[in-house]
Length: 160
Image: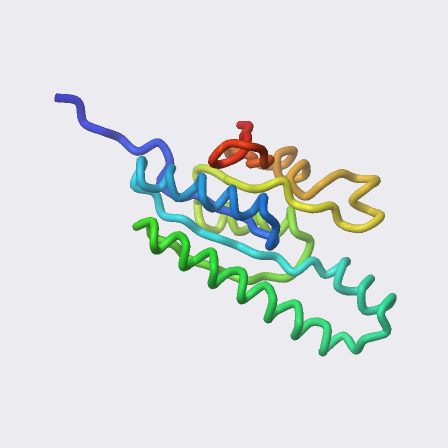
């Protein structure tokens, strides 16, 4: 009889509230159930985007930040509920900063074996010039990155 070994013990899932994030969490749940993995969902409030929105909207930073935290918290709670309903184990965290840097830092801190993420959005004008958050995570990650890019299937398309 062969002893089953787990390929992925800890999976980090960066989310941004998009449908791609939903697909990534859904795929990570299935991986977690197959491999007995713990899931770690992280949402990053992009400080550069927050500053741009504040400047362009004229809203006070404190008010804007509180709205962004509420929105992110609600999405994290929804994702946590989805994971728990699947039977997987999950931890969620809300952070602030440069998304790809925070994601990679959290993956290191949590000693993750895999990042499963959606095609996260671009970061304003800088994002158009420098590429998406997902591209940055893929570029600088020292662990595999599974990318959910959406599509027609149950989980959409994916790439490793």
